[in-house]
Image (cartoon, rainbow, N blue to C red; front, side, top):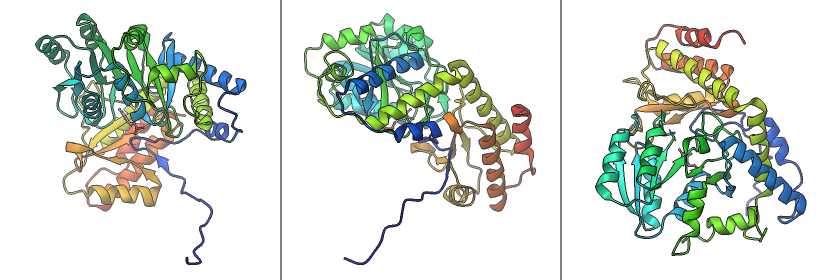
Length: 395
Ligand SMILES: *Cc1c(COP(=O)(O)O)cnc(C)c1O
């Protein structure tokens, strides 16, 4: 062994404007410093109950089966898929980006016969395409779709898709990982049957908890299963026995993350759901105006742009990685590159949770202007910031 020493942790104070994680609210960090309790301590069980009530308020649901899975957003996704699908059943999965594809992959691993309904990365899934698929394939257990596609910056309208799924007696599974806490989500009002999210996007917590809720129809389907859920860890019946019901030990809840989620959700309600959605919308629109005023082109279909995650095309001749490095090292700002077919073609700029602020909009626009200019991109100096500023008004 060498005499190598390891210094105290001292990560730089980044502004996280990528595709998640986003910045953690100071009050969430504070909640995470409070002492842990035993996993069956009545005081901890009470905190779990409060967290469930907070989740119901933010999901806008009365669903009894509402918990947070210990794990990241993908664990929530996998829990929804694993519990609702039995081997040999049909799943119609809508795919217009990276995360729709991930749902399809999971569904096939759990034995589903998967029918893919695809659209270009950057456009919404048209209800007609879902209808055609449902008519063509016959009895379908689950229709799955991503509400906010973080890979493309598209916000998917759900009303027609819900109606079609229910007309065909299928359950609707919706990924709200990036929309919950930033965009309108109304689980009961919209008729969603299974809905999962994640702590580290618009809820301003670290990654590690995945909110999950099942409608009474989904819960019935779960109770009516002929086969055991293939994942023991993600079996909703076992999880629900710990989060409610018998309070039976299943796994040791990560108390610190439950505290974090509870505080993140409390912050959402303190701000008010409507005000919070309005803030994300306003800041997103200001960013779009600023990017366009700089001469850049937004990638997502107009009218369906996601205010919490903007995709913007990388101009010809600009080096993607070099620019993102410069933003990170010179400005302490993280943005994300493109995924899959959009790699090297777009940047993804997140404005999620506490990071969705007027200051961050102006900061990222100013930094982009500087680094684009440094690479020889011709733009009108100050135009981006000025355009955004006009929409943001005086603070
Ligand atoms: C981030 C994300 C996920 C995956 O979440 P992880 O926390 O990375 O596991 C799933 N769906 C969407 C839409 C996401 O943006």
